[in-house]
Length: 282
Length: 304
View (spheres, rainbow over the protein chains, first blue to last red):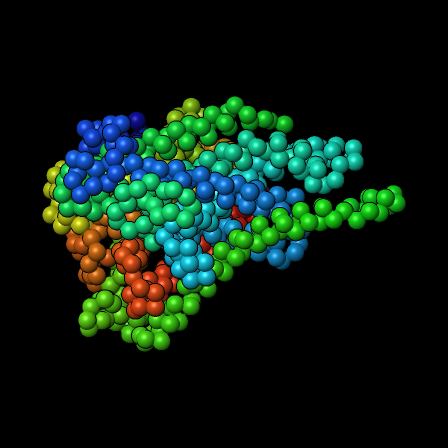
């Protein structure tokens, strides 16, 4: 084997090694979490409230807090995200500076650290102008603003993928622009939009840092009863357990992580299924 | 609806206009979010600098805002952030770019279909989980156990390395996009001159995609600077001006989270420090994002 060939083979090996390390780390991470937490994983975990006694502590309030947060967050990001995407794709004149500003701004917002959204939520929603307090609505809106760029970008791509011949056909038959969008473009773009929404929610469901600032304090032994109710959430409860000195709470944290990862896996599977089932190629 | 006016059916369509206005309002919310972020950060930051001198903040070497004799030098937090970010990049840049070259230049379509979702999975893991992993596995089992490194329980090394793997998929995916956008003709030209795959990858594709690769790295830096949970859980919360990665550090993000966790009274100096540090963090990531967008635009202009 020539030196040149040897270098080529070696380089190939190094590149493969780079990727393998990621695979290895992911494997170790999953192994660690499952081996730590499997012993505490049971239905009981979801039927018990947090407690100072690790043997009796559970995730009930955190689980329902997350359900409330995600539901409220979805109700916020779907209309606002899709409306923004429709405006940018179907109405906005890109020559106008304000439309370009909106576009660049969405790009920029996508890269603002999540903790900064937490600060925004603390200053504007929890206290300050809205003064909602540390409630479900404040948490859901904070997470919603955080993942809105994901929805907008995905919805724009889905809308752009609808061929213009569909719009032209509809307009030629006398439909107005909005009728065309509502009855032709949006239905055709629904799979792409739904995929984007699920991906946005799967980002929101694991976000912890902003909830530390707008979420409830350490101990919530009740389920949310409405938008104005105090709450905790899965990642927040996991973080609280990690912060406890007793090792029994670390086991609980690992069990909580398994629950969180299973929820994430379900959501991602749903997104992939939607994409494969309904994606149309024109 | 110009066409309608031409045909004489000149009924103004108020409904259409209303809908357009509503959609515009939704789009405006993203601008309002930015304004809200800047306004909330600025207001309390200005109040903060009413109490603390800007010179002390920028040049002080001690950070102890909540002590009886408070010190407001932000350097230890910036130092912690830079140290952890540096470690993360030392992991994420070589591994991320190596993965990107492999996926773009070497992998067969089937291999890509298997490996890309694994990277996406890594990108989808919540950061609190990475924090748990760094604290309960990477520090005791890998660093202390397998590698025999003498580190404290909370240390910058473990948090930085694990954060590197969190950032890696971002760098790999943006860099791979840039490399895939390099026209095939460039590769074929190089092969025609007798280059092998390694030479094509490193001397043709890599330079041609450089601005996109730089953008990927900058985006990675900005994610590492802004990451909170891994450092909050695994790096400890001790303001530290040293450089020894085996010790505990506090970063800007970890300080914000740790201070905002309790019920700090509005208007107190503790409350204001959250915003002052947050503003500094926001500015750092804003510069990074602006740079990254600029570089991405540059490589798009060349090839698309």
